[in-house]
Length: 351
Ligand code: NAI
Ligand code: MG
Image (cartoon, rainbow, N blue to C red; front, side):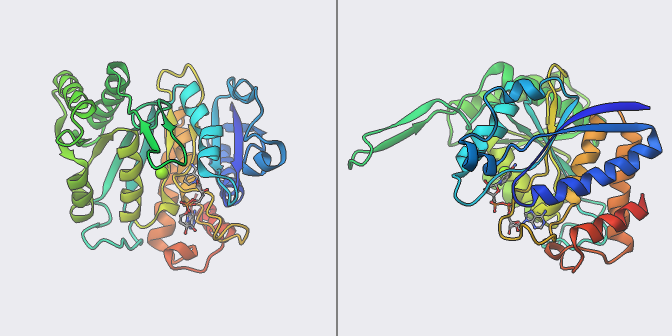
């Protein structure tokens, strides 16, 4: 029996509903593969912020530094500015634990209708590799002259040789294990310092990965191509902002953000990696038990893979694909009437 100690942060809204669904799946698949999990649960959330003035305690990161992985639902609540929940919890975890790769796979499953006609099941299978600790999401900048007509805001984007190189290398290695094709998201026509630098570094790393075919696209054109011909992409590497936008767009192409998973990886394993679905806390549907658990369950599969249980991870992905292909059980975001627990029960039968 292999045992893993997981830091569990269900968070706010539907985070509280999809995390338990994912845990039942982990337990079931773990039993079949001799893998067990122990969870230390943390109440870090906007609820905690409203009660105690902080999303997590001052020594929060030290409390989870020794865990094998972090599993998070979602944070965000009406009444708490979104930059508070993001910068008070998610960004410190991503940065302090050097989780510089944000991995977001997207597939069109058989049985799921995409809003995009050209997005055909079996053909759309891509991964967005998003830079996760620098780029446009930087702390450098400021505001001046608040309230005066000359009020201004400046925010600097930060691109480092080390930061871009390690991210792009990860993308090329991943592409080499997949279909051998990488697309770099850029905008070096308009953004004339950081993105030409990005382009140069991508070309430099490409030379080290001759087995991977690659090209680059300006972000605006890339968005259009993702909608018009999503099946042509394999691995897409992008900066923090471009990767964030592309992965929501690609998830929508695949049928909705309720199904999209994400991993924040520290590839060197010096620190725990964090696994969280792409979606947020969905306050509009929270508390009704109707959230789609696929994103969280697929995220759990990514955690299994990271912890060395690839077979178990593939079984979970097959179970998701099986329910969608062979039953009509769907949550309401996918046009069905199933509750979160109904869907999860059906998936457990497929496992
Ligand atoms: P959201 O992802 O929470 O919701 C967008 C839309 O998709 C809503 O209509 C929602 O009902 C629907 N949706 C999302 N996940 C779903 C699921 N699993 N099943 C069914 N429907 C689902 O994004 P939004 O509305 O922009 O943000 C809401 C809150 O979540 C904000 O406070 C935001 O800051 C936070 N957020 C947190 C994230 C995180 O914790 N990583 C990521 C994105 C947003
Ligand atoms: Mg996002």
